[in-house]
Length: 399
Image (cartoon, rainbow, N blue to C red; front, top):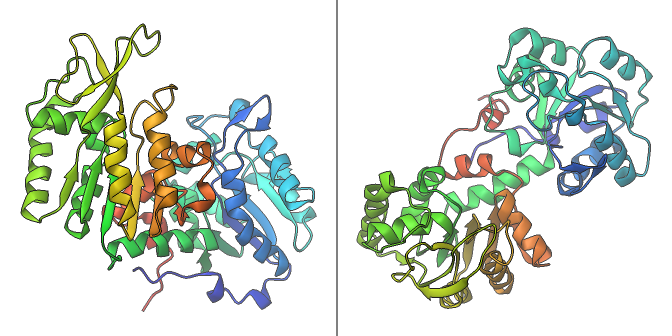
């Protein structure tokens, strides 16, 4: 476990009126100028409320989308300020830029305990390149820095690393700390049996994470497109299914390591297949080795779902990352939703990570029955792969 600075190290009694830069992750979906999913906004509320109660003047920094270093109002954070205000039950000010006169003017107007959201950081190319000049312009706005954006902790960006290097009084927010504690427990001595359910399209996206966790696991359950590659490595014909043919040796190596370590690997025994994802004429469930010519696997079948459910019944720790099929195209989300429902029945410590996996537990209506839902995505995977995250390194306590 990393020893990082937290809000408890900030001396909250001495924050009254202090300009405080808070890196949040408000990269949320918008439609018609409205926030469609406020999960990330709600996740930041504990930290924001604690800082508000201390009387800090809060300047919130976030990115949204990939405007590629140019002003593009399609990616503006202005509607997010409105949505955040509704959650906080007060007006949230908005600065037309994250640096310069606009930001300074809003700070000047900001009263203790109030909040201003700065415009999209990525409207400036210096954000993603961690440009020293841009980092300095951000840092000059605050006397205190708080990072509560775990989802960007794996990015060495100006608002994540550069600002932290320039402000001495700094800390991780409550969300960041919760992520480190929950995910860190999986890398320590988790209660056994420890099961990892790993899905998604490709092995290459998650091989480092699987590799780092493997020696800690009792059960590894695989689904989604990456399971196809494992099945193909064992000689199964997957017809037109997504298979990473250049990763077959890697899949075989992971299976061999699991066998040597006496880790039980659950591969789909049956698969939902279709002739066409966008306009299916035929949808069927077949044994894993009998995908018809011209068909592709798009979900795990009923027997595979039962196998995972049974494994979860005895598990004391569970990590789930990645959907079991083409989750974004119902009815090919059924396997993923079934796993979400089974996870909710597990009595152990359960952790869910990844955007589609989080969406699955929400769609299944069981999000409140999961021990920890990670906001991290890529950051979660890199943390669990044992890689140092720049955003956390920047907040380490100095010995």
